[in-house]
Image (cartoon, rainbow, N blue to C red; front, side):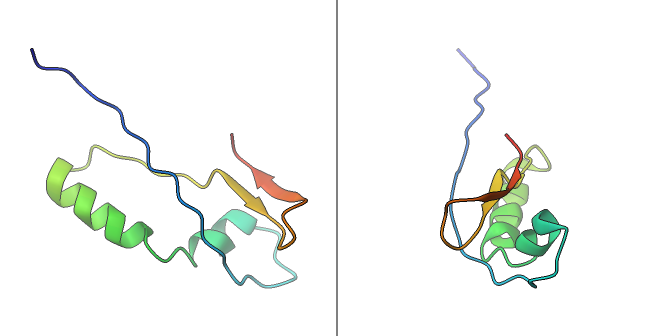
Length: 70
C-alpha cells in the first residue's frame, strides 16, 4: 500500500535582530542558520513538495511573544 505522509520539523535558534525592527519575521528568518540547507536537501529529495514557516518570535527573556503565527 502506498501512502502520503506529512512530516514536521521544529527547531529553535537565537537571532540577533535590530532593536528598531518592526518586521520580526523577516529579520529572524534572515538569521536562520539551517533553513537554506534544509530547503536544498528537501528539494533534492522531494522536488518542490515542501513548505516552511516561522512559528513564533520571542524576546530574549522568553516571556513576550513578538510574533505568533500559529
